[in-house]
Length: 268
Image 1: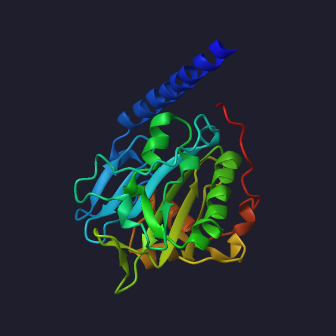
Image 2: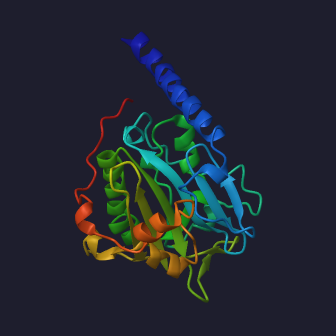
């Protein structure tokens, strides 16, 4: 029995390495100009491409503008467990973020790209805990309505085989900051989701205040155009113009399932 338990950790690491190799090759084969999930980038911001997501980091506010990635149904199946090790992003050059920035602030280190979306390899799980992927979130928000939305998006990836996801921050004038690095506290957060796999491509957006809420997720659903007006970000601009206008200008919540994602079987 001891021999079996000794071998198992190495087996899991090997499985994670295989997933990482597949994921790394996917990124290498797709340059930024051919990735339809990416919004238009701002040359003033620092753009970082990790294995599973791309991040636009705001050099002035020391918080991400957005993270973007494709989430497939297969990637929602946990190969590795959440590691809870928040660390500096080795590719971030504009500043050095620290766990100390959050200590005593009253805010959670809230994921933009959720760790549960990145559980398909050891490497992507590590990357999900880079501090560049964190934003100060009210605990009631992070552990409540925001968590529900993250689970719902994973269910949509399962339902539709794959979705594009962009998650970001909204800053108000005179925003609060925390820590010695002056990390901005967003007043709101957003997600935009594009289902591109079915016979009818559809999109949906969400804008939520950085506070707890007991409202249903449907209450926060908006058009992607609405999110663009609030953020000034151009999403899914690589779609044909007429298609982009149609998808982003309307939202029909009846076309989306509203059952929170169920727990998927873990391979670990």
